[in-house]
Amino acid sequence: MTKFIATIGLPGSGKSSVSRPFAEKNGYVYISSDAVRFEVTQDPYEMSREMEVWNEIKKRIRENLEAGQTVVLDSTLTNEMVRSQILELARECGVQKIQGLYVDIPEEVAKERNAGREVVVPDEHIDRMSKRLEQFPPELSDGFDSIIHLDEHGEITEVELKREGGELRREFRVR
Image 1 (cartoon, rainbow, N blue to C red):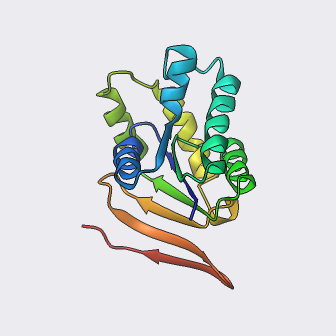
Image 2 (image 1 turned 180 degrees about the vertical axis):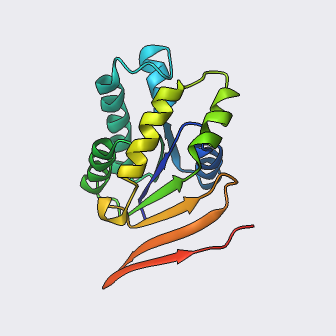
Image 3 (image 1 turned 120 degrees about the vertical axis):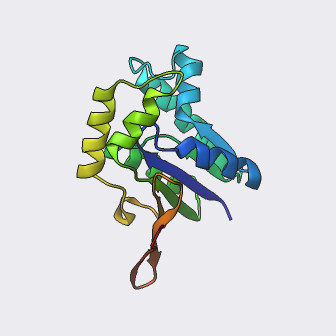
């Protein structure tokens, strides 16, 4: 079964730490928006050529999904329009299942982790992304078949599933 798995979360939330090993372990194609941005601009946080970056990301998603590969997209996807376009593309490519991996951590934890990175995302960018996620959190109605919520420790806190006749939501106690 061809799947598309998309990460959602702030910079520094742990998306790459979870999604890259998961993709490698399962033999899935891993596409990092930061890596593509670096290929295009030589700077993983340069936003002046975003259209070109996202066109390349979409091209890679399409090629791999149409070849029957499961794709893991590692990106913040805090912009609801971009998220919608990506999920629509996955459906156009015939995927049977779209899963979201939402690493939902406090903004202050993201900023603290970000400060310790080699390349730091400016706090004002994290503020903006955090506000967008508050306004437009990932939802099944976006086009996901399921959304797995993780906390700042990488623990599953909630799972949402589309089911015939409705939706199912299960919360988990952590720590």
